[in-house]
Length: 209
Length: 209
Image (cartoon, rainbow over all chains, first blue to last red; front, side, top):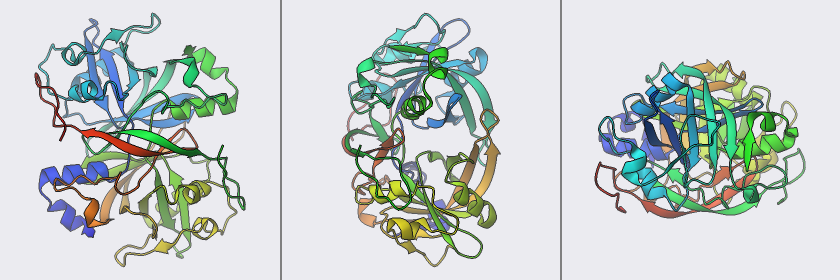
C-alpha cells in the first residue's frame, strides 16, 4: 500500500504516531541517568541515541522537550553530565516504566526498581543492573527548527562493561550483553546475529568474519 | 572493566572505531537511495537514521562528509529528495556492499545487484527488494561543530509497504517485514519480539499488548 503525505496527515493521531515511530526500523534502547545539582536522580528511556564519531568519541540523542524526559533535559543542562545504560531483556519492563509521567520529586530509579550506582569518577548515576554503561558530558546542543526538538551531543568520558563481551578487535558484542532493540513506541526485541561482514571493497563480495 | 577517556584516546584506531560504534546499542539499517540532477542513481547503507517526530512526519540522519556517502550527500543537496529502504535479512550482504568505495560514475545498485524502482510520484530511486520504502524531502541541515558531521532532517512524502505488516493501531511490524538491526560497523541481526508493552502510567506495571 502507498501512503502519501496527505494520507499520513489525515490519519488518526495515535495511528500516525505508531506508524511514523516504526518506519525508521530498529532503534537503540538506553536508559539515560542524570541528577539535579542537589544530587536527586532521574532515569528515562531513550530510543534516539546514535553514534556520531569515534575520535573524539561522540554520541547524540534527540529530546522532545514536551515529553516526560523534561527532567532529564534540565538535569543535563544544569550539570553537563549524563549516563547511558543499555536496556537488556532482564530489565526491559522496568526500563519501559520509566516513561510514565511521574510527579516532580519522584525518582524513577526507586519507582521502577532499578539501582543507582556511581563509578567514583563521575557525578551522574549509572544503572547498576545495566551491562554496558557510558558516562558522557554535554558538548553541543542544537535546536531543530522543523519541529522544536533538541539534538544533544555528548562526549564519552568513561565506559564500564564486562571485559568478556569485547571482541579482540574492539567490537562490543551487544547481543552477548543481552541488549535489546526497540521498534515503534513500545516493542522490545532480542536479537540473533546473522553475521559480521568483512570491510566492503569494490568488486569483492563481503564474507563473514 | 572501566575505560576512561584517556584509555579510549590511546586505543589503536581500528579498535576504538569498533568500540565506539558499538557502545550505543542496536541501530537501524536503511539503504539511502538518491540520484543526481541527471538521474544517475546512488545507494548507500546508513545506520544513523532516527525518528524525530510524527506531526509533521520527520526522520533525521547523520552524515560523515569524508565517507563513501559523499555522493548521497551531494545528491540530496542538489535534488532535495531521497528514499529510505529497510534492509532485510534477504539483502543484508548486498546492502553492506554499498559501503565499498566505488569510483565516481558507478551506481551501487548495479554493482551490488539491487534494483532501482520509481513510485511515479517521486524522482528519487527506491530499492525494489526492500519491504518498507519511505520517500523524503530535505527540510533542514545542521553542521555539528564538535566533529564536522552533518545532521539532515527529512520530511516524509510517501510510505510504500505491504498492508499486511501494519497493525490495527498503526505500528509497522518491522520484524514481520524481515528488517534487520545493525551493531557496530559490520554486525547484522535478525530479531525476536519479547513483547509490546502498554503505555506506562505511574503506579501500574506495564503489561503485554
